[in-house]
Image (cartoon, rainbow, N blue to C red; front, side):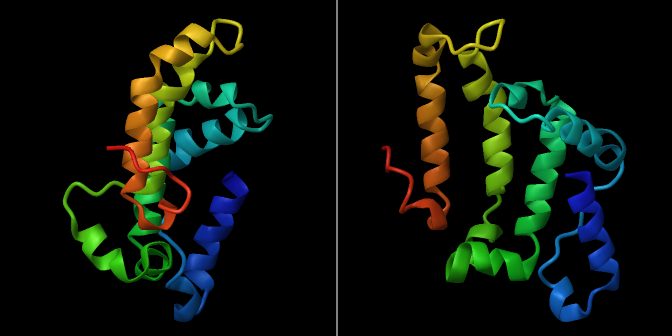
Length: 151
C-alpha cells in the first residue's frame, strides 16, 4: 500500500495535467507517518480477521483517502457518472471507502471470537448493522446492480 501511495503521490507531482486529473491527493500528516504504514503492515498477510486490527487512525486515513478519490472530479465522474455532481454536493455524502471501512468495527469484527474464528451467535447479533451497511451501499448508483434494495 505504501509503495502504491508513494507512486500516486510522485505521479501527481510529475504527470501532465490530463493524467493528474485522475490522481487523488493523498492524506498527509498522521496518515502518512502512522496510518498508512500500519495499514500496510497489518494487511501484509491478509485475512478477513486482520481487518479488525485496523485502528481508528487507520480507518480515518482510509476514509480520507476515499474522500479525496471521490473529490477528484475526473474520478467522481467515472464512479458516479452523470449523477456525480448532485451526489457529491449532498452535505451528508460519505465516500464509498469511508462507508465500508467505518462499518468494519461494527459489522465485521464482532463476528469473530477471541481466537479469530467466526462466532455464529455474534453473526446473528450483527445482522441489523449488516442490513444498515447494505442500505448505505444502495446510495451509490454504481452498486445498485449488485446490492439488494432494503427498505
